Length: 339
Ligand SMILES: NC(=O)c1ccc[n+]([C@@H]2O[C@H](COP(=O)([O-])OP(=O)(O)OC[C@H]3O[C@@H](n4cnc5c(N)ncnc54)[C@H](O)[C@@H]3O)[C@@H](O)[C@H]2O)c1
Image (tube, rainbow, N blue to C red; front, top):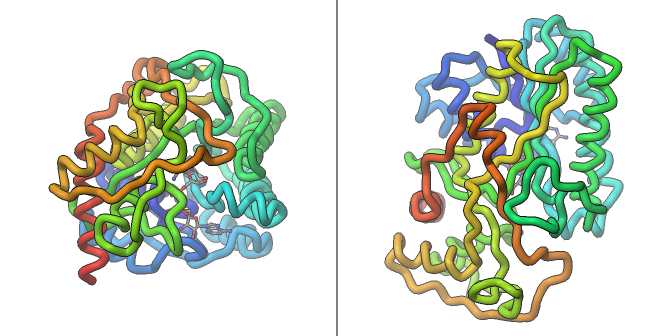
């Protein structure tokens, strides 16, 4: 029952570790703490009552990765979150992104291929669809040329896994294409911990409301959407985490239809940036200071998931709402600032 979670102290990884432990899995976390804090381990322990095994390890160090898998050759599944994820930074530092997101994936697959049980879950993204021609977006929508090196690492990452699965039938893999993960654990023991200026909407909202940022800039108010702002599919991180456990279980139970599968993970509902702000104002009782400014390069107009495949095949359904996510994100922000 030993599962390796890389990047397990990060935002989505930590919530997934909680759900894995809740289901009785033994979890080993690898993280190099480049975008997370060791305190997350205490948060996970406070929620589940179990301290997961943690190895501070940089997956770019191949010798360390080899040593790790030799020591833990009884791992039965791997969920690979570890990656860099800032789109803007990836444009400035493409090689850093290719090394960390692609190089480490190759090392992982090389070592997993030596294990008896080779079950692999990969964090992909709806960025692979770009501006899809049809909404909601199904898994059959074409993959569009990537807008950034970060987006490209997800596309190439999927291709590397698919190619490897073709020649290694023992390897079973699922790529999960996340839409927009937000929120925090309802206990406020873990949540999103952006280092520096947040790149994503919700931490920017909560940091503005708490006084850390002066104003939120809403990029573009003239998109062809009902209120003119971009539309996204905001998914609560706890719902997202639960989908990982179901995907892993599907592989462990040999229920997969092929040894490489892809699923969208979203709510199926699009919300505009202004709707997200309204939701935050409602649940927090705050009045967010925001301003609509020019469009930002690279933003698609609207993206939301067709979730039928994940609903039907994984037996997964989101249970939490945008309001739940905003309330949990606000509770988390207040907790970390009070600390
Ligand atoms: N958050 C999103 O909006 C989003 C959307 C789509 C896909 N994803 C993908 O999901 C995954 C997790 O995202 P997140 O939001 O939890 O990010 P995160 O930055 O919070 O977590 C990633 C973790 O990986 C660790 N890490 C990075 N490089 C490492 C390395 N070389 N060795 C060991 N550890 C390393 C970081 O320290 C961090 O704890 C990433 O692959 C990301 O690209 C995220």
